[in-house]
Image 1 (cartoon, rainbow, N blue to C red):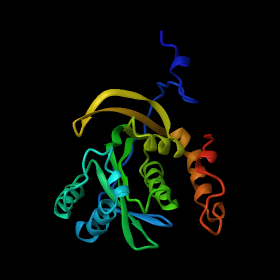
Image 2: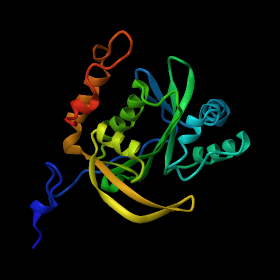
Image 3: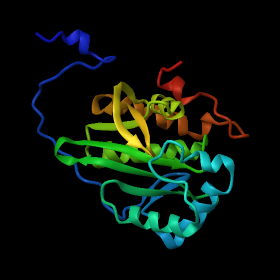
Image 4: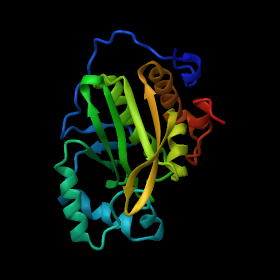
Amino acid sequence: MIDSEALKIGKRELSGAPVAASAKPPVAGNVIKGASVEMHPINVAEQAASLFDLSHSTEKGYKIWDYLAYGPFENREDFDIWLQQQAESKDPLFYTIYDKANDYFVGVASYLRIDPANASIEIGHIWFTPVLQNTRQSTEALFLLMRHAFDDLGYRRLEWKCNALNQKSRNAARRLGFTFEGLFYRCMIVKGCNRDTAWYSIIDSEWLAIRDNFDSWLADENFDDSGTQKTSLSQLNNLQ
């Protein structure tokens, strides 16, 4: 007999309840609009110069590739070829992040493991150039993908996975409201090295409260005149 209490995570419980709903696949070519950023389909001619320069011109820029399965690239031509391959992919379905105030493209994120029949989807392939990291815009970019998945497309499970050694990504998952589900040891080989993967998720019953926390955090009144937050998203999501 399974001890359901032993298998609970936080407030979650095991369930065998009937499920009738299914989700819609995200539409390729769609622009997801926010207050400070927009999520655009990849357009190499318009976006590659900004993305390459911002991710290959400084030591901090090169660091963003450390835990990704690709990059950094030897030259702009190789980068453009790779970016075009991502533009043609349907799963993962890639978006570039457009900074509206500064009128340039500053990062990439995607949907992957897109499973409408089971209403499950993942956010991944996230790389933020240094100018986007630790900004209000970076949080809004991920929120736009999260909100679109739950509210517009009808998913009931949103996943986040990362190299278990990538503490920044693990901290980001918890800050954004994801629940840790466990470690998958020796599950991949990336750039010739072992990768143990940390799994996180948000499920539909948790989403409304998390969405409200994002709305509160992103509100103008949560930032002072210098742009410093008054209440952190971690505090709103009850993390210390």
